[in-house]
Length: 515
Image 1 (cartoon, one colour):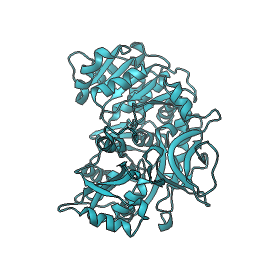
Image 2: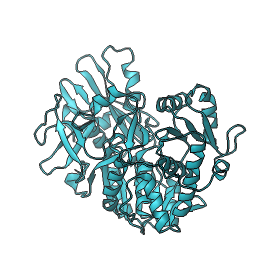
Image 3: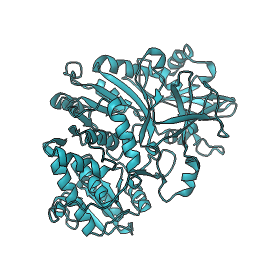
């Protein structure tokens, strides 16, 4: 484990390099990187960025799939006190331009798969003075050559735990992404707190497969780097590659979103694969259905810990350890260092068991949104509470139960309907592979409940059959009034359903819109 002096991201790599330089830090494809090598490479990166004019507080964007370069850049910037801006490579070129411009990035590191994106927008990026290519480009320097031209000398710029380390842009399910300012202290509070409860140790082998531009990717990987265990990086979320990595590298710890767990359970070879190395699977970022969870518990036969959090809280703030049948719909209890409240529309606490909005306060809460004081004021209170925008309640034992985003709630005939509850019921039907429930316009009820279903094979179920199935399990006002079918559901990179995109066609031209 790191020494007590580890209070920043830069200190993580420095500490391990000083005390155990030959220990494996990262494995990516055929490449294995020790902590000593990561320390040296990140120092070269720091010197290269400094020579290019990047200094304390400056922002550098990173556009590339999962790879060792992400951590060489992140740790190099941390040694300068500069700020990393992981950009979702799933964005379109104009969307990337928004993020890079909003951050005021001085430099961009871009992978060869995304050269075309950056070429299309680089002339618009007025703050950017340096572009570095991971791969061969006719105008931009190669990342490896760029680093090789500079010494492996740590610049040792003075940084503190309160300095912003990363601008992580939100998924943008309800509008343009906003940059959450995450400090070293935010990351260390989450990393130190979660290491033990996620069963990390120096002899663990962690798998980082979720995109590194997301907290489920880079936030998870930093825990492995902090404790000093090897972290295996997968470039893409590929169930076949995940299964192969588990067996080849004897993975002990991994984080997956429920949609990936569902796909992994359906992967050829899963039934015969040796999964005995697994200690723990942490899952979160979107709700899991009872059916998928039960199958996962049976097949993986390891600890499964559900977590709930968001970008603005540097990831997880609650955890469910006990998968007793009565608790399956809970996302657990807050960590000991996290405070929670359930409040009404006026911000007043409501009694246990009463549904309201979840507010949280801890050392993990972001500093605010970059260059967006209005959004910051709307999300963070003066006394440090962060308004999550999620609806739920606390039971008498302190377990948190979440229904949906505030904006996803359906109001039908004056009754509140929480889509996740209906989705969970429909997912139990054997002919349903995936489902989303939304509110659509209704002249009588204001909104009516509609299910959009991805059938599990052909022929799919009849709408009437699904409604009958739900009727035995739900109150009448919660039942879908109609069912549509789709080949797949729109999701963002973290696996969250894009409800707004699903609702849009139904509300087009309607005066009162549900967003």
